[in-house]
Amino acid sequence: MMAARPRRWLRAAAAAAAALLRIPGGCRGCHVGAAASLKREYDAVVIGAGHNGLVAAAYLQKGGLKTAVLERRHLVGGAAVTEEIIPGFRFSRASYLLSLLRPQIYSELELKAFPKYEAFMNRLVSAIDPLLDTCPLDVAGFSQGSLLQKLRALQGLRALIRAGFTLGKQLPQYYQVLTAPISKILDLWFESEPLKATLATDAVIGAMAGPHTPGSGYVLLHHVMGELEGRQGAWGYVAGGMGALSQALANTATALGAEIFTEKAVAQILLSSDGKAQGVCLQDGTEVKSRLVLSNASPQLTFLELTPQEQLPPEFVQRISQFDSRSPVTKINVAVDRLPDFRAAPNARDGCPLPHHQCSIHLNCEDIQLLHQAFEDACQGRPSSRPMIELCIPSALDPTLAPPGCHVVSLFTQYTPYTLAGGKQWDDREREDYADQVFDCVEAYAPGFKASVIGRDVLTPPDLEQIFGLPGGNIFHGAMSLDQLYFARPVPSYSSYRSPVEGLYLCGSGAHPGGGVMGASGRNAARMALEDFKKL
Image (cartoon, rainbow, N blue to C red; front, top):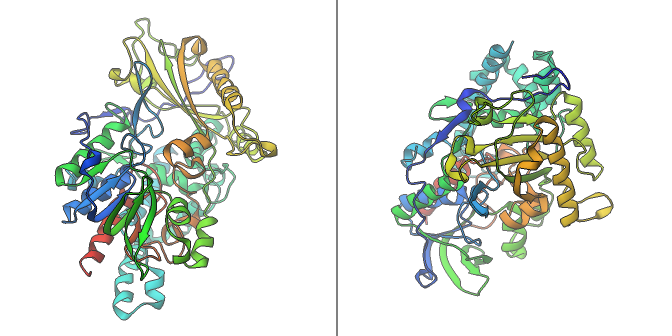
């Protein structure tokens, strides 16, 4: 869409992305255990009630293991929560869209030029998608293990071989998509700068990378892998906000018999004299014994703070400490008293939402160079002067999120460095100055936006880290770069959810296949833990 002067571009996502998903059980209150109910021993303890932790707990309990989930915050969901931070307005405060949740989880846990380019990308998705639901190739087992371990490791290798056969003769072109800068890939397909820049945003979103960064093509692929109700590549809003999905997962886990406890921060993972996991110690000193511990926390928190360092190999500790978790993201949640009115697509006279209000709207993406310059600003320690903005208005489809006539607006922005130039830390003034800058940008596209604002919630990278436990503010628990994917996530030789400590598993986004509200890490880790538990 375009206005004659000045030229303004909006990106309205495909109609499929405008879906409003109603998750069975998502609106019911989550039943969490009271403090007196916490037992002193379980078969398995899950650290953190983020979506992966809840998925892992449901599978563990379904597999017959008495499971407890311990969450430090007052509510479940991790970054996928709905919070009323401004009276009357409910926000999906961090995660805000759904697409990547694995279809197996819906069924098993009973929940619910461009065409050619799309066909090309969809074929790559069909090849890689099965890898998300399988444990990566166990490199250590394949190279150093027993004959039985080597045979089991071959199962992961088979998945890679099948992916290669699916791609066939076009494998070299697909290899380029995974390794080249997204700008180079899009130049091969398109001439339109606004189209290339808009598509490129999916390759850099959430990543401390620019459109000219090698390997940025994979992040785009990661974001087009999802589906909703069988519709490939579709994204949608969850009725009641992302917290409704977390509530549904929690309800499923508790219905199966798992116990969930909030405001139970874990201080240390307990190890036996022979170095095996045997439970956790809470910050209040309470010890909870278990034979398995699954951590939905980040790799850095799990292994550098919760696990006794003397029990971990020095090389492993070094690699975890070097795990890249830089983030460029500042999320701004806004309460407004009217629907944004864009120059490129003026509002209807009756004030009702139009189709573009129901989709994702990308601002400051007229050309690739704008994105690159925004990235360069952050590399110099400065918030972008013209930040990349993805604007969503979930209340356009779900009016329960705001009072009548009002709306909630999600602004997912980048690039903002974790530490500002000269080693300066973010303070209230820096935070509000950046938000004002973002609002000025939105105002240029939608005059009257600033006057409509009732309140705002600004979350810089340090805020995302402190509130939601996202290391460096990284929404993926770590960069989705090729050196930190598949059998290198979080580190080589420990990508199968197991850790150097027997009985301790990583089930969060820092494990394969990475970030996004997909639940694959939780599901895969639980299956691995159940398999190991049977051998005990």
